[in-house]
Image (tube, rainbow, N blue to C red; front, side, top):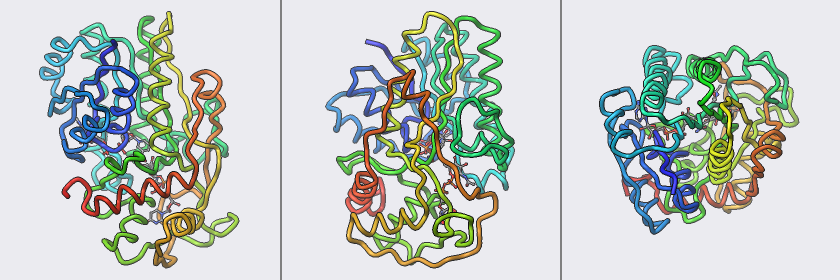
Length: 341
Ligand code: NAD
Ligand code: UD1
């Protein structure tokens, strides 16, 4: 049985991926400093899977601690989620973002190399395409110049990993470029639990529905789109989690080193109003909203061409908009205060 280290595994996407790994009979070791998460997510992952995992509360930048974990656990491959992800905050605190996301990855890869682990799946983002590329985004387009320090850290880490792969014929890397992950495990037991005021659309909508926030501000109604609101490619977090298993399975089969980027999205652009009305329609909740000025840095529209992941990884998203909305609501209504319940 292969043993997988999941950095940031207590977080939103990490916990869903840890669950998918356990269900696929991988052994799971999580390293998370719990900066933006709670260990309760992992307790629930264990309950849902009926299996246990190993948890270390540690920062990936603590090299000595990471070496000890690798030596003790004999890790076969790493899925690397740990990092900071709030776009607006990254503009205010760029150093924290470069330290956490770039330095954290450098330390992790150094330790992997020292300990002979050569398989890595990295959490990248559609934001690496930047403004210059036209949607649908495809992996053959060049890395753009993302507008925020957060986005720049993702593009920078991809670039570093490509250089590492050139220098080391043994190392195998998949850079997974997520589009807009939403939804929750169908059990309603794990989901997205952002600290403070949510930056992203879906958790904000869910918190309005549960009465935690008064109304949603829709950023901009004058974009050149069908209803004037921005278009995005929303993907169910469980489909995304399965994408990690497919990427891992593919990497572990490769006989030569590689570094490949894969888009993970559905390819279907939906507007902010599609999401609001979809949520209302499928959950029978009412969402109060008002239009407000555009948010700085938002692009009018982007979505994925995910043919490469479908052809090479045999990955296929299976969840519908209805699943995304119902699962979000099941999680939020069962856990109005997130994991603090
Ligand atoms: P999250 O904040 O829920 O999870 C990240 C986890 O990493 C948290 O549990 C946090 O405590 C942990 N962490 C942060 N810095 C750490 C460090 N130095 N050492 C150890 N643990 C650390 O975020 P998420 O939504 O699950 O995102 C996971 C990854 O996917 C991130 O790298 C993010 O940038 C990337 N991503 C997310 C989205 C999205 O919309 N959620 C989109 C594209 C890419
Ligand atoms: C954002 C980041 C992106 C990051 C991703 C996941 C920006 C510019 N991009 O993507 O780099 O990878 O999150 O962390 O921030 N919206 C509202 N009201 C809200 C919240 C959002 O109208 O309260 C709108 C936004 O204007 C956007 C859409 O909803 O049109 C989706 O927003 P969001 O969930 O923040 O994701 P992105 O901006 O696409």
